Image (cartoon, rainbow, N blue to C red; front, top):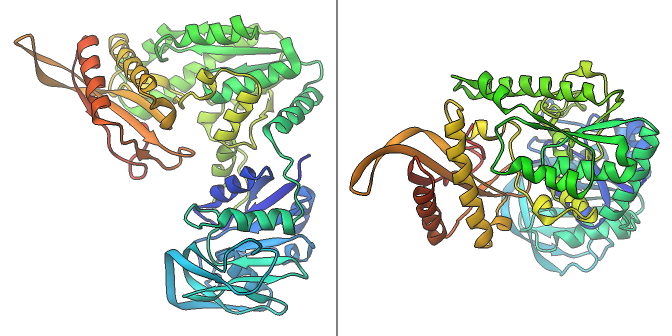
Length: 512
C-alpha cells in the first residue's frame, strides 16, 4: 500500500484542492470526516494528518470537533485555518474574533526559521479567509510568522511535530503554498513521493487478480473516460474473464456505437456485448418532456437492457464500475460518515442491489485528472482519454422537450459540427466540456428570401477542474460565428444558434 496522508474535512470549500495539491507531489491522500476515531485513523497508518479549513467558529455551539486521541498518535499534524484554530483550542491555547478580518491576498512575514518555512522568503503573499484568529498559543508552540491581522499566522511545536497556518497553502494565490505543503510532507512527515499512476496500475492489477480469482466480471461500458479506463485496467488484469456490456440506448452522439466497437472489440479485443435497444428507449420516452421523468425512464430501461445482457453472459460474480473519488466524497453527509450508497448516476445507470454482484471499483480513490493519467499509462488513445464528460441519460437531457428521432438527428449533427470545429481550432482540450443543446422553441428566420420557422441550437462550453464549479469558456467570436454558420447551413431544420454564457453556480453545466 502507498504511504498515506489523511485530510480531515471540516467543511472547507477547498478540501478537494488540498487533496489535489498533496497528490501532485506524488503522495497518496484520502479525505475523512471529523467523526473519524483514533482507532479508525490508526488503521490507515498515515504518515501525517491535515486538518482542513471550515466555515464555523471553533468556539461556537455545535462546531465540528475532533477525537482528542488523534492528537496523541505521534503523527505529524498540519492545521489549516479552522484546523489551526481547533488545534490551538484543543491544546490549551485560545481563539477569538480578530480585530482585523483578512480575506484575499495578504502579506506574510516569516520571522522564525523552521522546517515548515524552509525555503520561504521572509515576506510573501498568501491567501487568507478568516475572521477569527489564535489569540494565545498553546504550551510548547512558537510563533513562526505573522500577518497584518494575525500575530500567529503560523505556529509550530517541533517536538510534537504539530503545526498550524492561518492562510490557505492549497490555493494558487498563496505564492509559496506548494513549498509549505512540500515541507510538511517531506521534511516533517518523511514522505518519499512514490505514488504514481504507474505504481497505482501495478497495485490495482494485483488487487483485481486477488479479488477475482478465476471468476468472471461484467463491466458497463459507455465509451466515456471512466468506464473505458476501468475496462482496459480489468482486461489487463484478468483478460477474457471480463465481458463489457454496451447499451445502445439510441441517445448517443454521432458514430458513438461504431467508435466503441472499433476501439474496444476490434482494437483491444475485449469481449463486448452490444444491446441495440434504441427503439425501446424512444418508445418509452414518447410524449415525455419532464427531465426527471426522462431520467427515471432511461434508468429503468437501462436496467432491463443490462440485465438481459448480463444473463446471457452466464455465471458472473462481479460487476465493475467507474466510481471516482469525488463521488465517494459527495456521498457523505455534512460532517458525517460515509454513506452506504454512491449516487445512482454513477452506478452504471443505477443498477438494483438484487443483481447480487460483488462490486469492483478500481478508480474509487482517484480524481478525474488522475483517471486520465491512468488511461495514458494503459496506452489508451488520446481520443478516449481526453474525451469530455457525457451525461448518463445521453442526448435525452440535451434535447429539451420531447425526445424523438428527428430531433435527436438534428442535435447529433449540430453537436458533431461544434466539436469538430473545437478540435480544428485547438480549443477542444482547452475546455472541460462542450456540447450543443436543442431548445424546445422555434424562431423566425429568412433563407433564400423565404420565411422559416425552425429550431434553435444553444452551444455550451465551460472551463473547470473537476466539474463541481465551472465558468463559461470565452471562445473566440470568430469561432462561434463559424460554428453558427456551419450549423445553420448544414443542419436542416435549424435557423438560429446561441451561446450560453452562464457559470456554475448558479447554473448547472447541463441544461436538464
